[in-house]
Length: 229
Ligand SMILES: *Cc1c(COP(=O)(O)O)cnc(C)c1O
Image 1 (cartoon, helix red, strand yellow):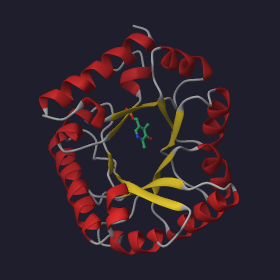
Image 2 (cartoon, protein in one colour):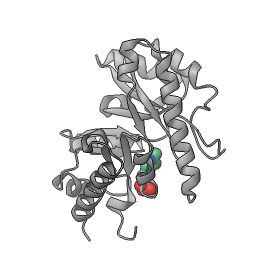
Image 3 (cartoon, helix red, strand yellow):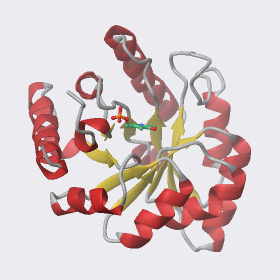
Image 4 (tube, helix red, strand yellow):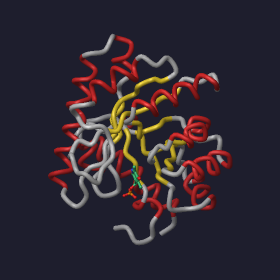
């Protein structure tokens, strides 16, 4: 099967799952995570209609965003201080912010570029030590700090669920949604209105994520890999 065929199938599955969950198709954005393919593979996905793509390495983000500036690029990877200017230059949305010092630097960089950077805060809901993200306990302080930065716009939360255990994944997704509701409760009206995104769900668990309220699913292998089933 080609990338285009798989993209079409995943998109129509995502729409089907939205209907099944009683949600509107346009409430869920499919981010095609192209980190395992080159420019060629990205071209095929875009030809098939992909308009939101995700990368986890700054250099790949730069190369692909420069080749395809017409689509929206999502940065979903580990943030390192010295890579922030590359990321901010190209990212429509940064999904993986969880440190104050990176928030401050993204804010400064965005200000220099005359941009307001949309970001999600990554939360380690499951508490696995292998996962990055802020702990639920420290999230309120991070929200407080980041909401004071004029060139950052907090758009919501992101998480990665435990792999290989769909019940645990559901718990993590439901937990992220509750945390977002709690955070919204402490915001002024304008901030609360912007804080409307939940980035959760990957190739193995996105259906559950949509049931639990995901507004963005990040799907890589199911679109770009030959051997994902
Ligand atoms: C790679 C990656 C994805 C996509 O994972 P698949 O299992 O290939 O769908 C989603 N989110 C993040 C943060 C990733 O690094």
